[in-house]
Image (cartoon, rainbow, N blue to C red):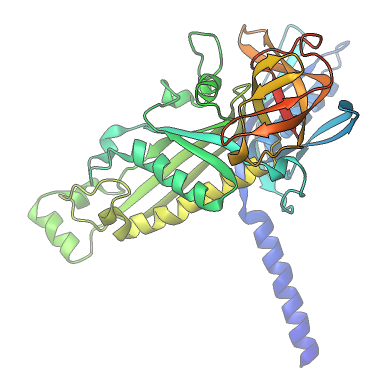
Length: 405
């Protein structure tokens, strides 16, 4: 009997592992590119497919890892790697084309996250990255009519701010009066008048943060609009609980790196739950009445998951802060005690360069200055430190970066 129970327990564990491995699968679309050399289309197609799978894996989870060695105030070793924690169950080719010797392959892949332990206790994980939450745009504003959920654009990021602060791993700011996207259908990518991909870098610099969290409310619709009508039949159906009063909640969340504007996290979240408030109530989003509904209770759980996902993603990112002034060997920077910076800490110095890609869109490139700053003074939101050589010799400028991996 004990042997059988042991066997059944082991079998049950294997079944749980199997289902947990595939329960976090999601379909991701990505584009891979490769050069066609000497007419070798099969080789280019394979390379483009590998590139697309790498991009798909990065979309659902990647970690930038680094090792730095500092001797006598100079950076003597700086190794950086990007590690993905995902694999593809199924791959479908959506489109393939060749132009100017470059093969582009668009795929949809069913990606599965591979479980991994939390980040190691490295330097970057000891600092709190500063982020700002912007307002969430509503894709279909008329869907907010039932329950008067018009304030979801401001109240949703406000609620996420509270949840992220409770996790105590980030320095969280809220600026929900600003939104990032004008064209919601194509978000998160949109060309600005400055020919950048997004306005994320602008807001990050303006607010002195490392990451920008934004989002779009994709769906607030009810499953059966007639169930919320004012007719006698609709009222009777609601009273008898025969009406379908379910309502959808779907949001897409984006996290942009504030220095380059590149996206580091993107995910869709959705649910359907009972909207059991009176159709005539002006409930509002995140109000006490909203949280009492079954729909509101479900949204609480979903947004808790959003906060954890954002927190876990940024926990493993390198810590970066802007240089705000350079005076000889003294550098001033835009992070302080609230981010966990302490006197004696050492941060690597990087130069930033702007460049334009083939579409004339602005990008940011980092160059290692081979120097390390030793923190001398910290205040709540800024600090100063020393480098071993004059900043003029290294051409250190405002908006160059200090980094800890």
